[in-house]
Structure formats: structure tokens, C-alpha cells
Amino acid sequence: MLRGKHILVGVTGGIAAYKVCYLVRELRKAGADVKVVMTEAATRFVSPLTFSALSGHDVASDLWTHQQSTSSDIGTQHIDLAYWADLFVIAPASANTIAKLTYGLSDNLLTIVALASRCPLVLAPTMDADMYINPVTQANVAKLRERGCFIVPAEEGEHASGLRGPGRLPETEAIIRFIVGVLDKSTQDLRGKKLLITAGPTYERIDPVRFVGNRSSGKMGFALATAAALRGAAVTLITGPAHLETPRNVTRVDVESAAQMHKAVGIHAKEADAIIMAAAVADYRPRAPARSKIKKGRDTESLMLALQKTPDILQSLGQKKARGQILVGFALETEHALRNAREKLRRKNLDLIVLNSLADKGAGFAADTNLVTIIDRKGNAEKLPLMSKFDVANEVLNRLGKLL
Ligand SMILES: Cc1cc2nc3c(=O)[nH]c(=O)nc-3n(C[C@H](O)[C@H](O)[C@H](O)COP(=O)(O)O)c2cc1C
Image 1: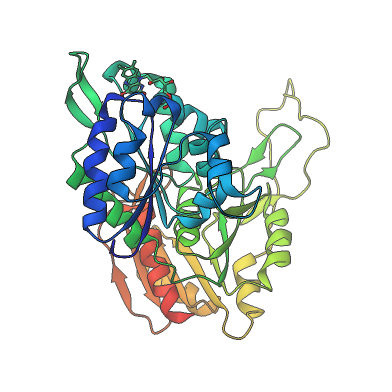
Image 2: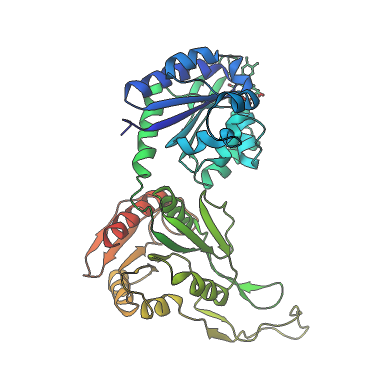
């Protein structure tokens, strides 16, 4: 898996920087071509000369001298490394650099390359336990994870300060295993394919301040977008109101209502090689949304809300499906699940349908895991074990890839 791969190692300023010397050595032993970029703070812990000798390449650290020392076209030297890398691993990743990455700061070579890179980005947050558990750090790490960065789980144990707790850099073997796992999930098997993915709920206006919605978080659709982009697809993600970060390398289109989603899907569907409808689109919307806020009537004990059907986006996509276009739907059924899902696949002219479970623990809305059954056109149903939504996404993409 590592042989011939271009692995860029980013080193930031922390005691654990010395451990990354072993990481560079082992990556090279495994056949990878390794280059190292360091922050100025990192050079205070380990000399660039050490990494240069271990990697067999000059080490980049200072933005300005790097500009002069490389031989590529003038003006692009600072981002060349981003294009060179098949994977960028930042270890140790300091709290400072994590914060910069979260907000897109790019005041040194390492953060510039991270911002410009499209390859998988692996971070190993490493710091004293109190810095690690600080809600600011945790929130930053969560944001980066949501965007599709891979976070190496920190180890617990004793720190140089004497504190015990999480935040230690894992052993070299564990980081390498993690990197191999990420490379395995970013095979470029969908390169050149255009995927349209929908996610999230829709909000249907009752009046200017109220809506009819549902509890979809958007996590499944966002996981699909993240996974497909990592596999090289050009991904457009049309999402209803979802409080999630946009995955790296994904084009996001925000909509609110079923009607808006219908319109946006109509614009992007024609050119898509595959469409995955993971959004929980409202089936009904208020027939006559009020122009101003509906007041609580003094004598009105109950209020009737007349609903009317929304456009069936999946059905219309199934009817207009272009030759060779693959259409994947999701179903959430509470009774006769398999029978209803097979019937939906047939009726809507789908190629695959993913049956979600609401009854099982760890599955359904807002959870990070899902329990699904994938059904194909022949009616074959494959029940998958409980797994992360990202892994479910890859299972769906594996089957979709075979159909494309
Ligand atoms: C002895 C020492 C050890 C440090 N260890 C860490 C560490 O493990 N993790 C961390 O986030 N910061 C650590 N710091 C603080 C960072 O070096 C400091 O925040 C620096 O600005 C990071 O810059 P960088 O992100 O550009 O590398 C340490 C500082 C010192 C002086």
C-alpha cells in the first residue's frame, strides 16, 4: 500500500517531534517517497538536517527561503508540495496548527500546503492533556473531522509535564496502520465520475418563523460526499438545512425546501454519472404559508394546517434517468421494511436502495453509526453490520462503482 506513494510529513512544534523521525524512517522502509515540511517551532525540537537525512530530500520549513531553493516555476513553489503528495500527515499536530487549519490561516509553509492540498489529510493531535481536553481544541478537531480530515486517536498516558491523560502521539506502527487505512479508503476508483448527492432535511414554511421539518441531521449524505470525493469523484452536495461543515473537495449547494431541492437537483442531475438521494425530503408542505407570523388567537384552541404533496424528486429522476446513469435512493421504513424498500426501488426505477433502520440502537438520525441493508435491482438484500456512516458510505460506493 505504501510502495511508491508520495507521503508528505508535516511536523509542528512539540516534544513528540522526535518520534516522527522514526515515522519517516519506517515509511521509507515500507517503500514510500517521503518529504518533510516543518514549522519554525518544530525546528526548535528537531533539526531539519535530521529529517533531511532520514527522508533523502531537502526539508522545507521557511516559506521565503523555500521559494528560492526549489527549481519549479516561479510563484508556485509554496504549493508544489500540496500537488506532489498522495497523503499529507501532520504529526505531531500542535494545538496552534490545528487552530490555524480550522480557520484557514496560512502564515507558514506547512499551513499553506495543508490549505492547498486535495489529498487525504491526516492529523495526529498531540499536546499536554489539559490542552487536548480544552473544549476549544476539541471543537477545532471535531470541525476538521467533519470536513473529512482523518484524526489519529491520541493515546492516553503520562506527558513530559508529568500530567496524565489523553494527547500523546501514538506509536509509529499505529500511525502507519492508520495511514494505510486512509490510503485504502482513498483509492481513486471514482476519478472522472460526477456524483450528485443530496443530504439533510427540508424545511417547509408555515409562516416566516415556523416550518415543518424532520430530524435528519445530514450526516449520512455528508459522509457519502466525503467518501466519494476521497475516491476521486467530482462531488456536488445539495443539502437542506444541516449544521455540518462542508467536506473537503466537495461543491456544496444549500437549499431549504423540497421545491428548492427539486430545482437544484434538476440543474445538476443531467451531467451526473450517479445520483444518490440521501436527503429526507418532506412529502408534504403547508398548502398556504402565511406571509406574516401566525398569532396565537385568544379563542383559538386548535389550528388546522392544510398540507399538500411536494414534488417526488426521486420518482422524477427515475423517470428521466439518462442512459447509464445510476440512481441510488434511501428508504426509512418502520414496518414491512424489506418489502416496502424493494417496492420503492422498482416503482422509482432505482439501481440500489439503502434501507435505514430506526429501531436499532446506534442507527438512524444524528447518530454517527448506521445499520443498513443494501438492495439491488434483482432484489438481492445485503444486511451490513453496525458501522460508521463513513464506512456505510464506502459500502454503498463500492456497489455503485461496480455499476458505473
Ligand atoms: C518544551 C515545549 C513543548 C511543547 N509541546 C507542545 C505539544 O506537545 N503540543 C502543542 O500543541 N504545543 C506544544 N508546545 C507549544 C508549541 O510549540 C507552540 O504553541 C508553538 O507556537 C507551535 O507552533 P506551530 O504550530 O507553528 O508548530 C510546546 C512548547 C514547548 C516550549
